[in-house]
Each structure stands twice: as C-alpha cells, then as structure tokens.
Image (cartoon, rainbow, N blue to C red; front, side):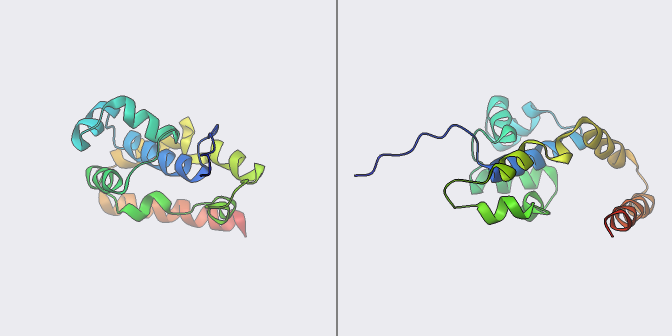
Amino acid sequence: MRKREIKTEPDPIDRYVGARVRASRVGQRISQTKLGDAIGVTFQQIQKYENGANRIGASNLFKIAGVLGVEVGYFYENIPADIWKAGGKKGLSDSAATMASSLPFGSREAIELTHNYYRISDAPVRKRIFQLVKSLAETDNA
C-alpha cells in the first residue's frame, strides 16, 4: 500500500479559488462569519478556504456561489495557465506557486476597488465603468 504524501503548501488552484471567494465576499461587505453561517461552517473554516489551506467541497462551493450571487464558474475564471496546466500533476512549477501567492485580486487595492464598484447603485453606470476598465486593460496588454 502506498503511503500518502504529506502536503506542505496549499495547491495553487485551491489558493486561486479561495482568493476569488475572498475578493467577492469582501467586495460585497459580507463577513466571514455571515458567509460561514449561511453555508453551515465556522468563520475559521471560511478563513481556511480563502487561504487555500482547505479545499472547498463541491456542495460548499455551490452554496458560497449562491450566497455571493455568482456562478460557480466565477471562481475559476481567468485562472493563470501555469496554474491550471499544472493541476493534477506532481511537482508543480515554482512559477505556479508564486503566481498563486501573489494573485492581484487578493491585494488590498483590488478588494477596495471591488468594494467601491459594488457600492455604485446605478447598474448602467457600473456596467460602463466595467467596460472602461476592461478596455483599458486590453489596450495595456496589446
């Protein structure tokens, strides 16, 4: 019988998904306690999910998506190629682990931007701002 390997670092995919949960939760001004209560876990478990220390089961990810008002696929959107290509393979590249630990939407600036974006009550204005930011990003990357 093969012994199970001891994991020292969270999987980059789990960190990515957790960071997306955190960004969405903070952007909507929902506390870890409220989110945990809504899906039936403790706020400490939400912390572990957000850090990638614990994987989020399918049922809890579905519940989290419902509470946050997003599709489950949102948590996997724009996942860097290094991370998803390495998924399921032994010996993830150092660049994948580094990318996961420095995801831009986990930064304070991104969280504040998301929070303020959702504070805009006028949906058409919010959509125009979204399109502006998207076009600026596309222009910058071209």
